[in-house]
Length: 247
Image (cartoon, rainbow, N blue to C red; front, side):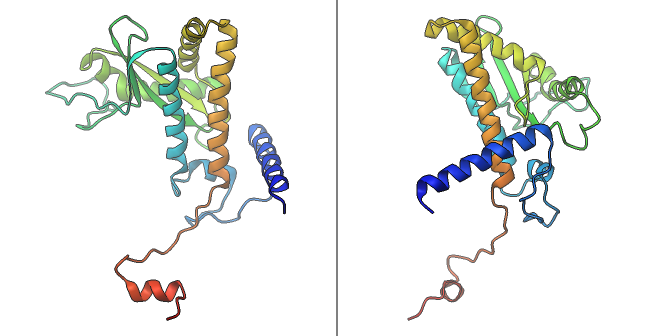
């Protein structure tokens, strides 16, 4: 198959996959069994940890947040910032993160208040997951934002003396209320930096998040998860045998 035709076929398949995922329709040409041994489906692809695609999706959104913060000229932008270790502090909620090596996803200086650090933590959820299926989008967003706030907000407010904002997105490209506020502020500032209309900046930022989520959702769906047996680099005889090297 010529390269141009092959590329077009892949593009069409991605386009169709995106539509089917968006409306929750069944995709017929998927693998029947995942590399982990479970029955394969769209939802399993978005949940399965094998292959590292869920982490890739999270990190893609995290890195995009940091990139846009830098574009809007915020100082001190950092990904995976380590939180200060606790020194006897206690929190009302048991779900608060008390790990010594706890990290947030992104931080910068001056996002909500001048000369005050702001921390963000990303969560990407599937609206079609069994645990969320009976919830409306509004309920799903509230549940996910509350979970992030319970985990980080008290520690960051009281120990870091900084602001915390959960950034919740769906695999279909939706944004929770707090994420929309962040995008609105980023749009206003990016419009000033680029000297463009705020509406254009907002559309541009939303488009970038939508495509980041779409690309990584499709990778979750179509990426290989086959387990491969690995041999030690020092096991020469086995390597020669498995590679069928003749000498």
